[in-house]
Image (tube, rainbow, N blue to C red; front, side, top):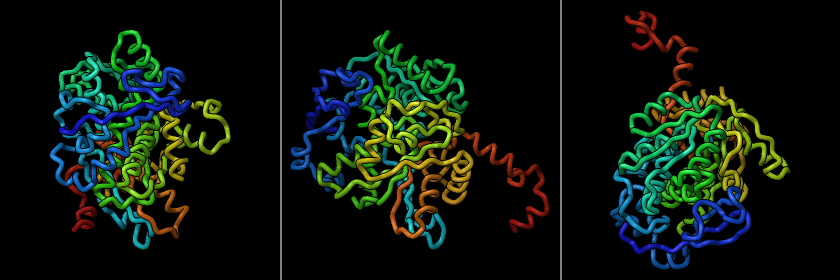
Length: 417
């Protein structure tokens, strides 16, 4: 990051008040925790001074190539781990021969700790240390916690994780390996969120939790920058995004919004938020005419643990992403998520966790309901299946022919000869 610092303001999504960065910490002082903030940059100046063609000569690595749209004033605390620069695979026949939707896969499982959340956590630790914080905390279903633990370890920053006791063992092992302080919470993500918020306010810790910390969108939005650049700035028609807390969906919209302000793209694609049937607050809120605060909270029970949230804390940004882009929310069943994960893994080699596979399940449902539409679609695979192997192990149990003892049975040998 060798460019001059870019000024920005923070604007509340609820009351439209604007603040200088030094005037607020995480959210609008007037609207309290309901007042999510947007970082808005000096787009006219950036448009004059910065062209998308200059990225070809950029020496910064990964997500930091887009530093002029980052809310940092120093390069001093950027983590040494390479975050970003994940592959975009073209799989035009993923939906089968004759399908009219051309599919691309943005594979965020290739991040340092295995999920898209590394983008937010890389920015979080840099911003926390820039602010003089000595300890950073997060409430998470697992991926954000692993990401924070890894990024903190790379810089020697103390971190405290608030995590549901039901979190996958693989993610817990990863955090322990990174040396994180872990607090296991009775209940789901929502209880972890409240405990983390209280601890940060009590002890003065930096709170990386999405929905509280509006800066996290500024890290995650870089996935939209990358996929546009990888598509030679040809915007896809559709982008399918898993939705739990809502931050990734809201961040993807913010990324496209920033690029549109710079004139680097001509439109924002339709954003499709995908939720599990048993964790579908945003889907129900979008379909109803009720104010958000009147939508019933239902305890989440989906097997897709990374998107298991009763009340999405970034719900305002998530809803804006869908409505402003002309998109929609899609609800998919747990069995369809398991089937989608298996199909994606066996047909592409991309190995998604259940929450990430929901994006593909959403695309399959959309394609079934819109069979005659020729479109391009990106599915955002937000996390690796190695971070939660339960759906693949249970799938093997249901399909014992795929799990063989030694020696290989003659019938199977004949089939593979």
